[in-house]
Length: 171
Image (cartoon, rainbow, N blue to C red):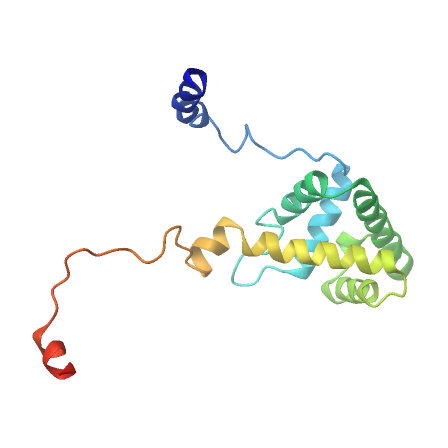
């Protein structure tokens, strides 16, 4: 019990030294080129408008982290193979990498993946799209600026004066 109590006492001091650099995500299963491609796909799904897009909010890093930590090796391989397929299809269809294609070309390629007869391609697109939306909606920017998330909603106000007009109208 004493060790547990000592650890709990020291935890806040240890955690205050965390910075974005010390907890920075390092890709575990994708190369840097594949990570950039994943960012371009996420940006195509949720582009920058008057709000930041998925790539600006580092949603692709969230996707990498979730797939690396929460999915089995078969799903990780499907993501790798899907990224390779996207790049190959872009080269074949447009004669240039996915990153250099315009928005209409990118959307056409992703739509083709979503409607594919190959189950692995559909699964890849469905997983990436779902994680993109989840990562975007749970990002700090969206939660604080768009959805106005409150950690503890419904603040308690102990003593609030009640106007007498409201009391007399209810009788």
